[in-house]
Length: 557
Image (cartoon, rainbow, N blue to C red; front, side, top):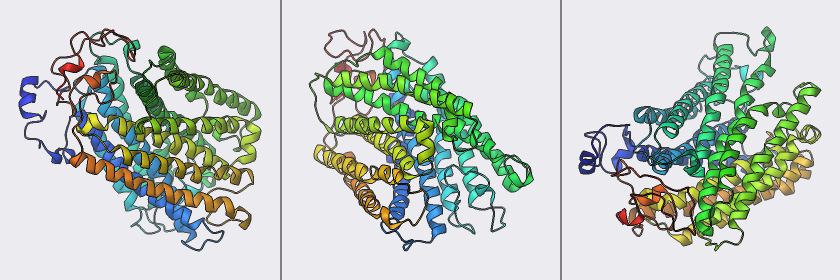
């Protein structure tokens, strides 16, 4: 945390002397957590558009049974890059960006614990993007082995060049892992050490609990993925034999390294979204979060149980029977704390005075799609069902209901909810609702047909298919194009609102939380005087003040 006096900061409005105090600060090495948060969000949204473009090209290919739009090798490269970009350059960074912006404000801190480390972690993200995109320029093109990079496919090097698409992919993933570990150390330290006076663990907002839980997963899981990526890089470049079966290596060992992190990584993504739901529902239902303490503890339970489920991705990989049963049980156990959250949200909404503004619509839509993905997730945790639909489109459908349906809709809910706080401007409600309906209809039209396709036996990762699967594929492709179009009102809304939107008050939703007690946008070090917290969050319907020294009237509107 910087030691610059607050009085000086209020005059310069910049924690770093000489740093720009206008739009150019978003292109600088700023150490302000709010600037870094917006840098993460905008950068990741750019890559969201790139990954979405790859997806629409693939759906354009799949609208007919024949491979008649792009070459099969190009198709393989596109689905590899689509998955990689969407995970490592969109979902992880955008959620880290939201956490960066919100966590210090929510816990009453002036900044993150290590501001320069925070900035360094962000600037690795564009480098990761450049590494991945540059693979289109090397001989042989990008990696074609999928975002999971299973050997022996990923060890193939038909061009014979040392610098090839797979090597660049591995360097990008390893660098992304280092960036995320740096961020996780920063978040855990900040939450553990920099909470305002009086903010006990059970006075933290549910979003902060969710971020803490997700970052703990990063700390125990990411070293395994990063180590696996480095070992695979050694196999490709210097000829070691960790995973190469031709020289005595074990490719299944790589799957253990990969899934030990990459299944819990789903919770790294979905836990902050759970936190977003827990902030939005009470505000727009005007009711306290039902079972707040249980919701908070369930985040930690998910962190623990998620470390015991990775083998359920390997039921079809010569996994012994006893291990299949063990991991089937542990995988199903995740549904318990997750179900607790779902019931808490429903109880929060039940009987509330609902306001269906855009953030609430996206949160409700995300919840509906998450519940559907949870049902199919339980099915996939079962060994017989998993083996039956293994490597079919059923898995693709389930995964996209989690990652797009719940996560992306949750991110949109968060952006609309905190947009007035971040920019000091209100967004246009009509464009927001148009964006929601296009997104919700497009997502379901795109991803639901994948389930019957999978049950009928259509394999995933193919550029052509049997004509009997054409009907559902046409529907899915139309949904993908509608989903692509849905981003247009969002971009128009965000840009025009930020430039010429109506000024936002400090607390446009009459919400309860420390971030709503400061001006919109917040001053450089957030609080002129650190708050003294005296009550738990979500005190809707209660006259008990959240702090003893700050009130909404202190904020400059």
